[in-house]
Length: 214
Image (cartoon, rainbow, N blue to C red):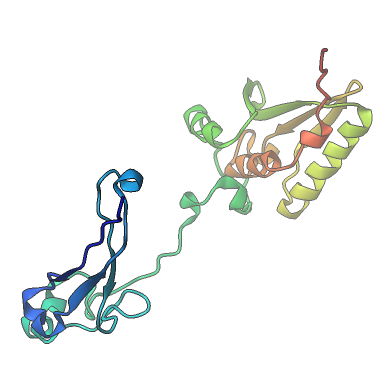
């Protein structure tokens, strides 16, 4: 069966104010067969004339656009004041904050305040003891050597904060960490900041190996 061919010429609908930009678009014949395209006629088109959109899709405004003063009617014109706001401490994660000096006259965090901050740390428990509120975290590790390694990693992270947790190596493979501010008899923001920094310590290589049953 002989192949079909089509040859068309038409114009693209540019905006009314850009009549000098009207250019014919010629469709070059592209042979097709009904068996290959189920009766549809395919066309390859090529626009004649320069690329008015430029290399990156931008263009200069048309005279009619400049005359309309469109730039004065949109947000972000030259008179718009732009400000770069630096996030305050409350907008930063606890792990990114620094510990601050605590006055002995400063009251400890209340139970409600501590419970709200518990949502920002992982794996810690809130203990309400006679001496005041404390934070506690337990790690089950592979062996005694892994416990010593975790304690070393915690020390390296908390050394710069000058606010150290109480660390205990219990049994052959468990580490217990407790945080509180002794000078105020309870919890301060420093305890949660240090807890969040400890949360970022890698421990997956120290965890017990999982048994795989055949």
